[in-house]
Image (tube, rainbow, N blue to C red):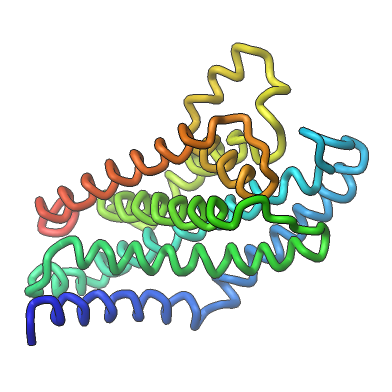
Length: 258
């Protein structure tokens, strides 16, 4: 077997295992986000949204749909990788991957690919649910899909880094609870930052999730508080930085060999 074929088999094996892992327990991994987002659409979109009126020229429910979809993609891409890789560490079979004759990037790509797969599946399901509450008109399919995939890659990689450093199951919940959730809710899901005072607008610009949500909103609605090129550039920059750091962690064996 050639080296390329060996790498392909290793990648496909990890990816297949990751996809099988979350699809076999779809009641726990896919159904809850759909129910949660349906409640968001009902409460914030229908009940509260009718009192708010329009935002940036759109009905409030139409305005928040992009953020809610991307929020589900972020949380599920992250959760899939952090729980899976930490479980591999906890059960001690990650060592088999480390000593296998495949490079670190293949291992990383397999886990990140699994996170992206779950993020995309949940995102598609939530998008389907949103169509019961709003007419979804996509401004740009290319931009929408690009942001969809890039955001999923970014947070799947972030979940991998969290899993590497985690020493207990409690450690894999700290970042999602105290970092990821606040950044997401304050990332412009439910409002335009143009409504904020100048000082808080500047503070909001330090939130990386803001750029992803606005880029995705541009893809769906054609409006954004952030220049599209800036948003896409920062997303790619974050991905490159996190992937490079993840490979460095694997090469050093941080959290695995020690």
